[in-house]
Length: 402
Image 1 (cartoon, helix red, strand yellow):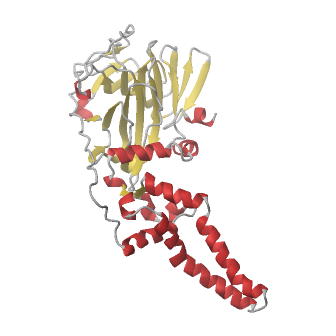
Image 2: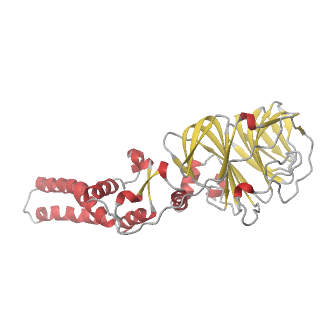
Image 3: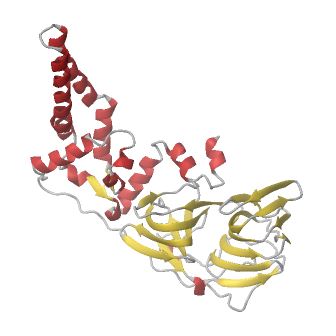
C-alpha cells in the first residue's frame, strides 16, 4: 500500500460556466481532465446556478454525492432524482445530465471497465475496522477518504495518519486487500475505485508508469483549467510489510491465573449485544484460532447443557420430596453463581488455546495480516445485514438487498 495526504494547497481549481471545480486527486499522476486521459478522478464542485448542464464524459461512469444543499438531476430527459445532503446517485457520464439547484458536491469519475462507489463514514473515539465494500475483480483498488467535517485518524498496519477537515487521504492497494482502522469524529466521504493497471514485472508499485494504456475521450471544453493546475506531488514510498518471526522452541502457555482471567471474561461476554455493554470488546479482536474454539463451544451448546444439568440436579431432591420449594430455588440461585464464576470459565479455560492472551489482539496494534483476516471473517459473519445498516447512504445498498 502507498498513500498520499492531499491538502488545500495540493488541489487545483478551475472555473466553469456554472461555478467552480476543485480537483482533489487524479490518476495516473500528470493526467489532465480536459485531455480525458485519466483512469479515475475525485473532485468537488460548487454549482452556483439554479439550472446547469454537466459535461458529457462518454468514456466514464460517475457517482455524485451532495455535500451541501439539495438538487434534482435529470438524465437524457428520461429519469430524474432528488438528492439531499449526503445522498448520491450513479450515472453514465455520457448521458445528457442537467442539475437544478445550488449545491456543493463530491464526484468520482472512473473510466468504463473500472468500478467506483461512494459511502459515508462517521468515525468516533473507538477505532473501527474498515474493509473493501467495492468487491471489484480489478488488479488495483484506491480508497480516497475526504474529511467533510471534523477529523480522522487512520491506522494502517501501525502507521497512523492524521487527516483534518478539507483534506483527502488517498490509499492505493496493489493486489492486496484494503483493510485499515479509522477513529475520530465528524463526517468522512469515502470513494472506492477499482481498475486494471499493469505494473511491469519486478517494478515496485510506487514506481508505476505515469501514463495510462488507453486513450481518453474528446474534451468538451466546458471547464477552463486555471494556471494553478499542476502535476500532483509524488506519493510517499511503499510502506514495508513487517514479517512476523516464527516461534521456536517450547511455547509458554502462561499461568493458570492469567488464562483463567481471560477465560472468565470470554465466558461471560458471549451474550447477544455484549459489545454494547462491555466497552472493552470494541477495542479487541480474537484471532482465528481463539474465535474457532469459542464458536465450537457455542455450536455444541456445551456451557448451556452443563448449566441445565446443574439445574436438574438442584430440582431432583425437590421432585423426590426431600427438600422444600424455597430450598430448591436457593440451590438453583447458588448453582447459577457457581456456574458464572467457576464452571463456565473452567470449560472455556480447558477449550481455548493457551496462552489465551496471545490470541487476543488490540485493534490499534494489529498487523496487516491480522487486519486482512478480520476483513475476511467479516465477509462471512452477517456481512449483508451490517453493510445495509452501516452503508445506507451508499448507492450499492439496493443491490445488496437484492
